Length: 437
Ligand code: PGA
Ligand code: ZN
Picture 1 (cartoon, protein in one colour):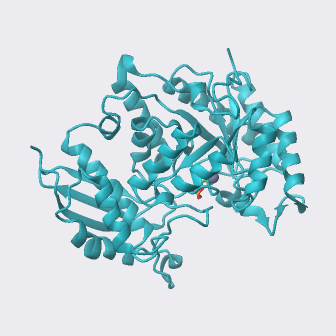
Picture 2: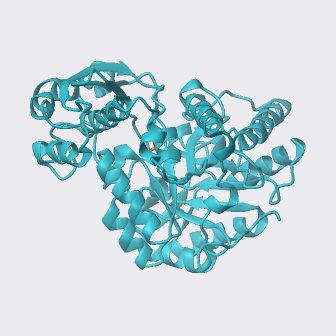
Picture 3: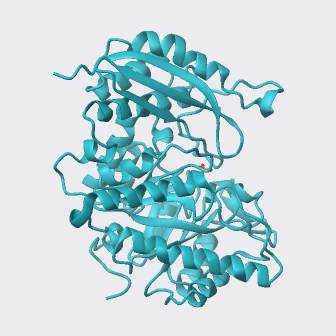
């Protein structure tokens, strides 16, 4: 029998896509198999997330992770050596108990999530199979529908426009690789459009074009023009997807837009979103309301959940209990799944299963601070999430994930099925098909 006992746990400090320190962990098992993982980092975070341990002080803006790395090499290593990587839940629970805080602030969410993911990688390596295959076993899986950013905004672009992600989805494509082909054309065309208007100013944190626009509507218009100019029918071949990340501009129940200096209460803000839904072919909206505005979420989903997918990110923070409650409340139709929000692989999987079992759509997601680690490509496929959100179509920390999915699709060969429009979940009738034929 393969010896999957954890023999060594080693943490080191490396650098993420924003040039900030982060934690990488290497695991070695008795059979010699190894696993490695890197902690990602958010910028627009939900208040209920597991938190990173950062050193503070003058170095690197206080963002150094030397204490988190030490936690891996001292306490976590001592606790995990001898445990069986085959029992991910036991390993993860050991770290949760060892940390002892509700939000992982003693040992660090960054230390714990990197270790948890590295253990999973090592366990798959012990079977000598890719991670997606280890996770799927004999289950039928689908290639996820990708959500890909064209313009950045919000906290990822110094609040230049309010909305954080202006993305496209290609449910009309017949395969994952075709969805990427279409996206490449739209992304390139959007760049040409920005150049033509004299507003090409580089890219935001996730690789989408810097949003040098005068209003949120101008970004939406540009997105539709880019889809058309690239030769596709907006709303038929390709739809829009927004991450509003509304917690970033909500205060005391009011939503304040930076551009135009306007302030709206929940109902007024929902009305504005409703106008956008009428005007533009929007298929999906993430965090339309702030994380504490549950009533707003319910109202929005009641009004628009049958015509667009309503995703909870900061609202649910990849927490199984919150997912189950929100589904019972009909507060949304889908849940974003981020391993470092939950804290460990076990908790991440539980949140995803809670979403699936309550009929919600599930979207595995990257963070704005990323790395060459491609684990989310494997989680999205191996767990059959149906959707994957990685950021834009530029910069290698993003492309590494898209490219890994291409390899997985190729490995699946004739068994490869694309989730396409079935990946999306709307209210009332989860089979409702909004676009195409
Ligand atoms: P973050 O944002 O990684 O900066 O927190 C991503 C998102 O809101 O989906
Ligand atoms: Zn979000």
